[in-house]
Image (tube, rainbow, N blue to C red; front, side, top):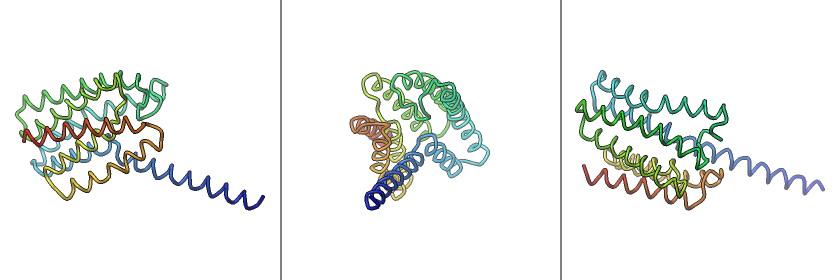
Length: 206
């Protein structure tokens, strides 16, 4: 009896540890964390401080802050099941607001004549979001993988070492999304495919 109890405890502890690791990986790879960090870092690396601040506020404040607040409120009200908006039907409605905000920011960036690479990158992100919305009517593609791989291509454009390192994190991220039952393999593969296609398009255009 004691032996069985110890085995059960070890099994439970192992599951708990794997769940904790998967949650950490999934959180670190969340687009709402990785993209704003990359945007701010990149802008302050290539633009004067004043311009970088303006663009950071435009992109982060104009897209991620309102969508983040909307998602949090939605979870509290029960509109969304969780912060990942994992339900396919809920996600389709979430896409509409997110796409509109990104479209507005994209137009502003083009009309104000910002750096060409930034204009192309933001436009590609919009294309990726629209494509994911269309695909979501049939398959709930992983947005974690889609934007992670797309972001890997952007990082590769500026630093091969950093880009490859970021890309190597993708398999772990895919595992975490499946382990946490947010997605199945098909959805992870479709998300990764979308990110690869749009990321490759970014490289071809530039």
